[in-house]
Length: 472
Ligand SMILES: [Zn+2]
Image (cartoon, rainbow, N blue to C red):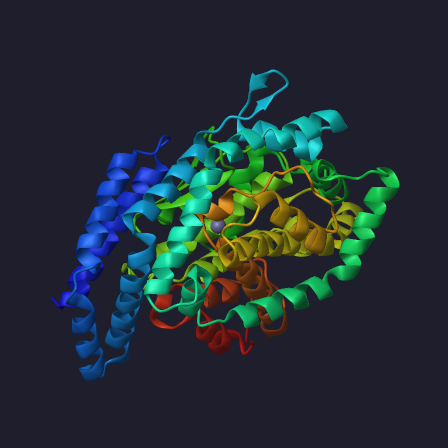
């Protein structure tokens, strides 16, 4: 076996073991550190980079070359992401966020309870209390979060990059300028919808505040829960798959409901052979969105090459998940798989522009919060958060509640932004090329053959351009 394939297999096993650790209810930090140590031993061998370069100069086979390029990138990534101190800080932050129980109405509740209050409770004071309950967690991680920024920047600098974002963007072949222009364009395109929404909110709640945002959004957006029951959810996914002649039981995917902190996750425990979806349904449309998103991850994993180096990049992976949650927003899906009356389908579909505006703007807000901190690690978190909230949401958020997510999954917001763009490009292509999307086998064949099976053999932008003719 070729030495690159040997390393690939060891990385694959290591990745599966890390997945299994994250899949457990409580994270075993010691075991996780052992796995990180293995990656360091494997990739930070001083001779490895030279070996890869020599191979790249000689090798003609494109697939082999691509794997070697990906390995070279993993070496650079490992220097930062597996730096002992940084790895510990980030897993510490994530573990604390996972274990955190907000204190609301005199007792500790789980995070889904807190989200439910923010989404649906008519009592503004209670919503405010729920929003502020996050403060305790933030207080306990701020020091680690700031330290993680300093360390990430320092290592990136040693690798010859301006800062940590510069290093991460180089993997995607993008620059800060490109991303910043893209976000400005999205902001401009969603301006009218967003202004209209904020105007309506202020009419109803004259001193509209951040803890009213989710409540007002869902009030305009959500269709009635009764049409999206927990009981029918799995059946509707299976029936949907059957419309493409896919037997759910023939896939190596298991769905488990769990009373977990987060709304859902997909764990590729054995690459393409044992894939688990764990989620926590609370009732209503959003459960379906989560399930279909996670299923999108799962079916992508199912068809990917069984190689660590050929796993698609995060932006593309999130895009594959968003395509599946996109299916349930089509008129045909709603008509065929729910009993939602025609007028409600139309109202719901009209609210999608607002959904798009909110998601994009929240992602962009968090991304620029992060970028500003990498640019100035000594900045006051709360002030930076307040300024990006004003800029992207038009809300003066002085609650001091910033996003902790960006510190355990750094710069992941850019992947969510790209994911939505990938979904939009792909749906446009489906509409013009295939017309019908739901129950049309050409759609699934396209996804499997053009998107899933090649994995990262083709860089994701090229893959999309080749398949759809559109560029992102
Ligand atoms: Zn996802």
